[in-house]
Amino acid sequence: MMNKQNPMVSICCITYNHEKFIAHAIESFIMQQANFEFEIVVGNDCSTDGTAKVVESFLNKYPVKIRLVSTKKNVGAHHNLINTLKACQGKYIALCEGDDYWTDSYKLQKQVDFLEKNAEYIICCHYTRVIDEGNNTLYVNPKPVPLIHTYHDLLEGRQEETKTATVLYRNVAEVHQLFNRPWFFKCYAGDKMFKLFATHYTGRKIYVMPEVMSCYRNHTGGVWSMIKASDRMERMISDFNLIITHFSYPALQKKKLLWLYIQRYLLFELGQFKVRKAYNTVKFLL
Image (cartoon, rainbow, N blue to C red; front, side, top):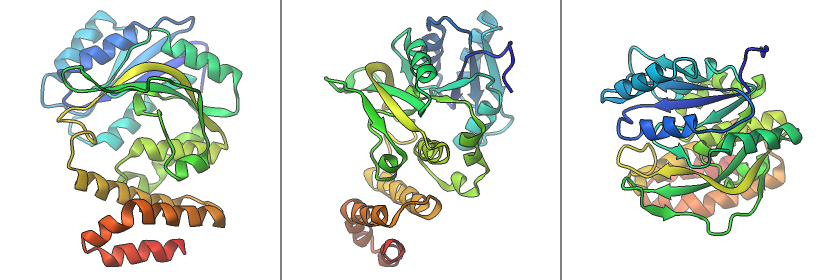
């Protein structure tokens, strides 16, 4: 429940072995300029490097602004996220993992202003720059334009410019019901499932602001960015099957999902001799 002491925004930052990056992330939170109160909640999943020491240095410097949620043993990204979100008290929650960071000091102000004025949206995102470990730009959209994503867009894989570090969402009970679903812990792209669930169960949309306000870092320790292409495809197919099984959609969209599977995944599964899996997916969508 919100009360007068609660901040407008809680920044939820989960981290694991981000010693080289976490300071940059926290500094980008501290630099935020806003006409409201915000808190920083860092969830350290029992990192084995120097992440804890770096976070502690910020805690000592900003004891009122920053809170730490730590685990006694490594629980994995999903459970770390849930534990950290439980500690967030804001009307809105901003997400950013410990290896990414924000680049605009008015990011939170802009997103809060938008959601305060537009009740039909559950999430506000923005464009992001993709960089490597040396901070070299790998990709950035040269001409950002406003984007709107509905539940049905997300279902068909359209989620452009909605990376985790861009997300600010309404802290309402409906979106967190996802964490009561056992199948959530089987998914790989938890952020994608979150956006799907939030739009589906609130009936609201996602708005993408046409501004580049964060950096997403490709590095060797990244969950997605540096894994083998075949492993990434396996994870995407696994998540696709969770989506078609646990979300609802009309008959016409079912056909679109079948066509999406055929275009993106069928040849890969056949090439991996996973004929039975491919058959079961096609049969489910027929």
